[in-house]
Image 1: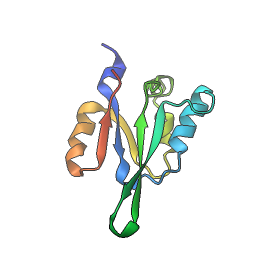
Image 2: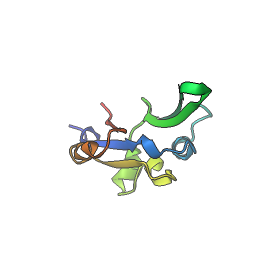
Image 3: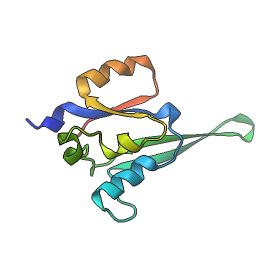
Image 4: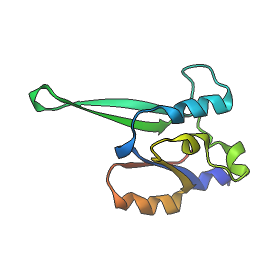
Length: 113
């Protein structure tokens, strides 16, 4: 059983500002070309009454995400967590992160396969 199998990310997307720091940090950590990253910030536009719109951002790990295993083996946070300026991404044991999901509805828990 892999060490990564019990690790994950808890993303509180209510406060994500869409700065893309997590996405850029990930791409730079691995030296990937533009457009490749282990986390992708999705922009979601919801149409509201009277022609208004509500814009939200959802950082979501991609299939490239390895939870920065090189960094976490050294006791460091994954690059996306370390560089998140709004402090909305948390890394840890899935069991511990899952307990925090009850705190608020606008969170996502992600763990690699």
